[in-house]
Image 1 (spheres, rainbow, N blue to C red):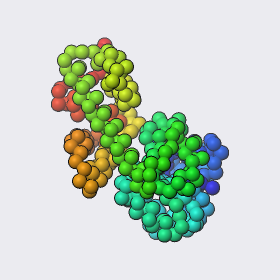
Image 2 (cartoon, rainbow, N blue to C red):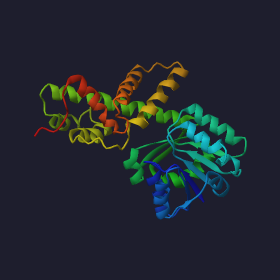
Image 3 (tube, rainbow, N blue to C red):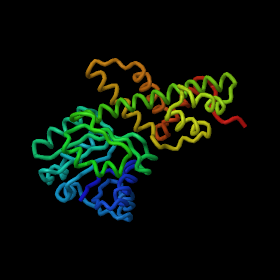
Image 4 (tube, helix red, strand yellow):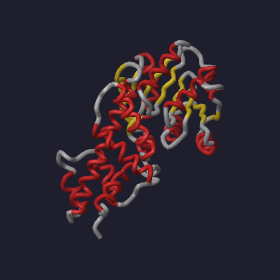
Length: 294
């Protein structure tokens, strides 16, 4: 039996993919509508403690590390009932320090822990094509591998506890800084009078081409900022990047500036837009929109 805790924009489709693959799932979330949805797909609702006592594999997919720790170690949490030999796999985006804390506490009671955040956003969660980056022990990774194969197209054990979370933060630095520089470049092109759609077609096959370019420029051109990866989640991740980098004296000036851009977007109530909406920050500076030429 597998327990899945956290049925948000990512967790809900991930749970449904497990169910489609024939996995028996106990599910929990504070959002009862989300729980009802996965129950209709074949899951059973359960408390954290019930998941702890009944499941050999437990996945958490929640907004931040504080919530992960509350689910695992709070009153009525998983750790109160979990059996030795169980593997807990946190697929949330948290800091390496938070992951290592969970690993150490669960190790004391004979429970394995993996930090296994993902890349691919809601489309990857729906399609089962997530890239999964793991930190922890090999035996726990091997126990999770059949489920990773359902949820993603790739899963790699990067290193010991915390390595998966570190890798995800590096991923978020690259993705969000790339969106920012792509946004800046296309605002420049539009302001200069070029057709941004033609600029995109001209450069996408060269060295400037990227998965980010192909995913985000069509959305920007259509003025479609419905979230696959909302700013609020990426804002949290970039905040974690800055805090983690400062803790080890690793200067990250581009990412620090990106965090301030996202802070500006927070002030302007843009947290629930897709992270492609970073372009709107640069558009406001230049008084120019990037859109299809009519």
